[in-house]
Length: 383
Image (cartoon, rainbow, N blue to C red; front, side, top):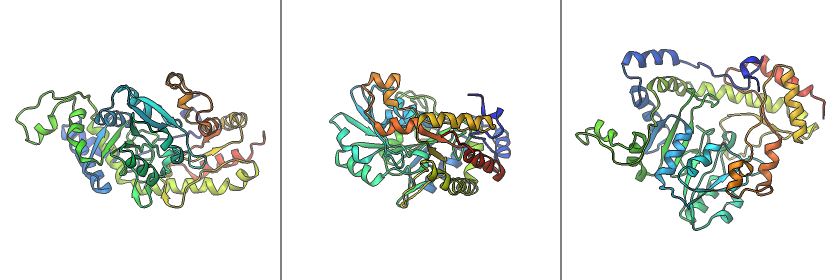
């Protein structure tokens, strides 16, 4: 696909929301632009206080946060990890890298989240973890998922890439499982280009998480004065983002209320303006349960068929508008088939993947831009 910047209305557009550039200059002036500088520490404190979690650690990506969680759970060859087939590859790769076998779960037809009613039958004595993904920032049914996980003494790692500041029955997403991973990629509501965070809700994992993140050394203990020198004590890698990225990210976090309100308005404008059109043409709009607070991460529609979706994408492209589909079923991918995935294993995922279309959505989207997208959709008549 031609890059979004060549189009009149891109799918996504990163935006300065506050003091980003001033903070980056301050980070440089501080003389500390590598990891765990002053801005990183401010973010750690802010996230821990906001979400009331024992420990948060910034990472270079949500992918790396997931990889850390797989190591912290001591994932071994032969272990099994239950993941939705309808998700980004990082959700499963983090555990496959440790030798685990992915067990692909189908998603609910309404929210596109892991179908909790099918979860228990996928559990075996080898199940190491369950990884629910809060698709589009709409929470999974965490009460049911946690009850099943606790019954079988299985760890839950929330892939909360899209759900930061969302809630399920009043509780923050990312605070249910033993750990959770967050994304600050440029496509997310709050972003710094590339970045993520690991939320640790089970304090047993904190000390080792710090070691893994610091190349397998006890460097964090050294900086706290707990040891007189640091050394190699475990496996690990370099998961620390630059403090310049943290500076940018802090400004985004400070603007979270402004971002939330802007995205909420855009989401509801789409939802209301397209309601009659969607009903007339059997187009599905997003479903959000009453007992959750979504994050307004994206607005998608589900078309009647793959053919209709393909023609609608071309229709929008001709008008300079970028709309994109989303995940391909992981169980049917080249790698997924190596783990036994077959057509028919996850029928909802297979159907939704062919028909879902994400509409342009970004913090600074103007009313005129959004109206242009809406009018282009309503003018589509190749049904």
